[in-house]
Image 1: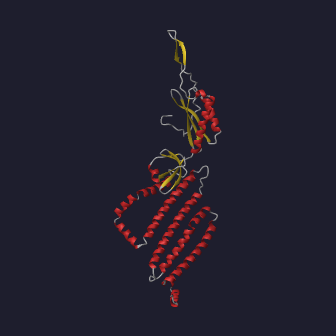
Image 2 (image 1 turned 45 degrees about the horizontal axis):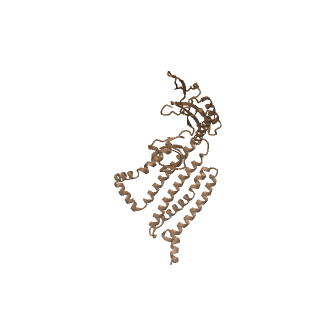
Image 3 (image 1 turned 90 degrees about the horizontal axis):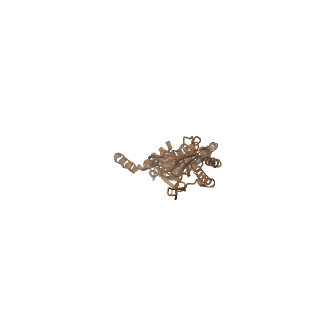
Length: 394
């Protein structure tokens, strides 16, 4: 039982007894919680006209309360008398709690700043190239900084234990071997961490970029601290390590702009007149919502002994619309040829006509089909720097 003298001693020197230190700790935590509540309301009211600041405050609200309370608890137990039972354990626990709460606070602060930057640059606009770059930098840098904060915080918390300090001193004594082993073991982690920083700074890829990776077409859906998730056209997900993008070539269709030129190839007979086919192409793209009005070209790019190859160039605002536009143009031109010039579809033919042989018996010889006059190529040039060139000179 606690006597009156014990209570008087606790009231005179509260930090010299277990109950007194516990009571002071509870009082300090309640006072600090009240101060935090009042201060948070004042700061939120001041920051209400600024949406980005409000986002950051929302992220650090609870972590700041916990960190403030644990810092006050650590201060109380540091002032407690060394003769109080379990005082060393309480000091260690409060120190670890303070480090953990500060680590949590810093992580949430970085996450809040990253989300505030992202919210200030929406990507649901027509020209979102700059916004996607900002999103990529904010996400990758925020996750990298958060990883560093967690590593440092974990190390600081472990160093509060004397045994861990001794282990650390032993490791420092053999730093050469330990560093070599740790470097080999952590090479993938460190490689992805450095690759993440390179991607954030140089931006070879950004969120929502259209890329072609080993023949797979897709969009950059997520960039984490270790890998990139690519959403393929058929809704599959391709998971690629960050370091892969630094060490391997890949195609980025939206590196500087999302505008793109698409191609449509047709094979027709030599008798096919090109002028009406160009008029039909102009009519098709003129009524297509996917066409951006930049490029519309029909050219003869190759010939064989039986057919000639036509290449159609059309442009669109992005790759998805370009795919739909190419399909629309291909279907429209095929329908036009089938309806108006069915005899100009690719075919194999030989025409024979009779004539008198020397013996008087009828015989046959081949007659070449007449070819239409070549149309002028002056008005068929693409006149664009983005005119694609095939490897075989098409």
